[in-house]
View 1 (cartoon, one colour):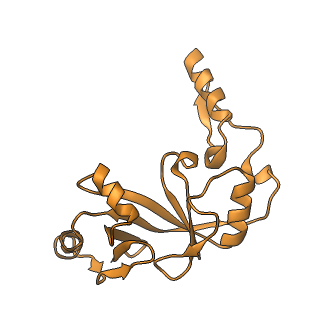
View 2 (tube, helix red, strand yellow):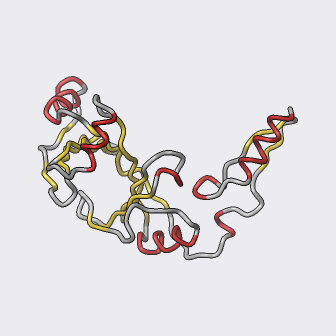
Length: 178
């Protein structure tokens, strides 16, 4: 019982994207932080749908073939994005997409990822927002770190920014203008 209450207190003091988390305690009650993100001052912006899950792959052709030929998904041709250091293939799942990422060039951020995870794996989640500029300003005020100071144009031709995993529960989160 004592450790459950202690965990709830620790969770309640969490900052960043997870300050709305509610932890159950004995007796069927829940404990939540008194000041939610809604109550913090700042501009209004909204999260939208999950745009894609990005997966780093060591062999783009083999991964594309798996999703197309084995699972029957619609798979795009590979698109080189030298400004991002990747080649991408989009896998249409109907309600969202997978983005298969493969290193392009020696400075690719995906190269380092694949050195650590030889077989590849989930790289990031992309969530749409209705106003990315307002979202970036608001998240900076809330001390959420991003990998760059400003947005840049992403693989879909829209402004994006990546939020640091240390502020997002260990997950690299990409925000994209809807």
